[in-house]
Image 1 (cartoon, rainbow, N blue to C red):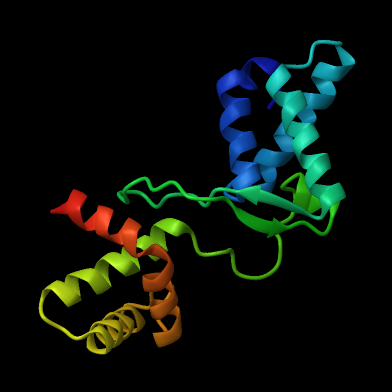
Image 2: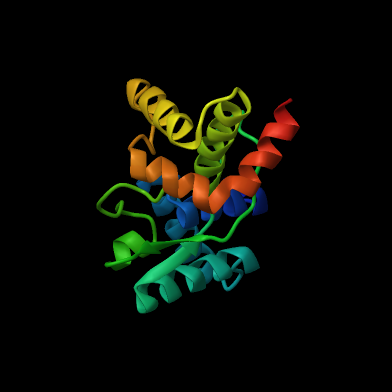
Length: 170
């Protein structure tokens, strides 16, 4: 990124959001930091870029950040509380390195599981059969939340959102 024109407000907003939710690449995060340094040297830093640096520093100091999980393409947008992400280093805070471990499973996936259980229940399956059927189908498809206990927990905590998804998709 040779000039600051490429680091306009839209690019800053999009990339900073990607750093916050973990979807930005380290190269994109690096470009944001380089843009911040260039703009700071010229005493003309974009307000959203200042907010981004602030958010990253707060995440590092607190050792965590709260982020809404990304919504998969084609999935209904479901709002819910943000999920905590552990931040152990400055590189992780600024998106220059990915955190270890598997990312938290979002509310949208849990609502989808609850919707699948509801569909099985409405098809006449008992509670246990519906939970088992969904778990087996998700395990065969190698999808997240495929264990019996995981499916039961998703049904227990997201059944209302699952019902809403079911009604919207019908």
